[in-house]
Length: 348
Ligand SMILES: [Zn+2]
Image 1 (cartoon, helix red, strand yellow):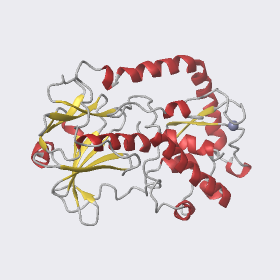
Image 2 (tube, helix red, strand yellow):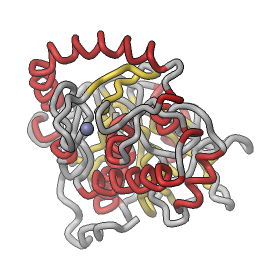
Image 3 (cartoon, helix red, strand yellow):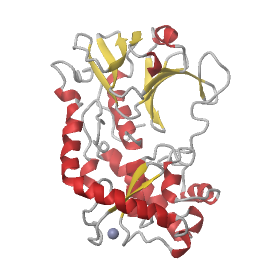
Image 4 (cartoon, protein in one colour):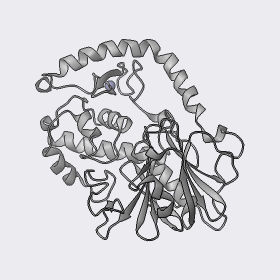
């Protein structure tokens, strides 16, 4: 599932392609994809709006439209965004099409249909609310952006010390930090040498500082590498390469890059969790209740290791299946308008 780095990459690619374009019409083939407004009103809300800017908040791509509206794209499991010529063939997984005045289309493709395209009103205070209501804030429950300047070590400590519970679950909690997902959480914990079952309340000050730096560096590097192209993730300008740099994620049984001990995998809150039990020690005081999770993990691990080779091969095949570059002719990106310079790296 795309996380902060992947969504940020898509937003940056889109920025170079659609800022300044005007939407002339919109349609969908699956009403539940539409959020924020009744599906029947979707076209009415977006037609005639100019795309002013493209950004990201949490795991949402945000297209700011003229008239204080925002179009949100939530990719969930299999969502993909393309900009194509209007005459490029449609495939059956395209859920939403936005016609642009310059003859192109912005298409949202989503095989599993969990993704959402929403229309919200941007209020003066910055909140995003459904246009026909005066209550509700799309990001009201989301925590801060971990890469924002104002997210300092001090701010992180303050938030952390208000929370209890195991680190992996806490990092996945979007009300704690926005955008961190399974890959970033496992990688950050490995980098900080903290066990995923470690309790937040048992961290020393130096642990907090290492975790803070690890979260930021894992996310920043992943953005630089255009995200991890696992499963169905791709961005308008192509795949990412972060998957080649991951230390623990989907490396069950392979040697830890620090000490050579095998990477272990457990299931925590329904999500697979990867770590090295040698350099990510679980202190004795955090072991209460962890034994059962670790025991269950050993069973899952053996299964995972037996299938590891085959799974990696299958994963590579699976993710190739959904690549825009391999879709029928014409279904791909049509380069950025010639008048527009490429987006500056790091621009937001
Ligand atoms: Zn290790």
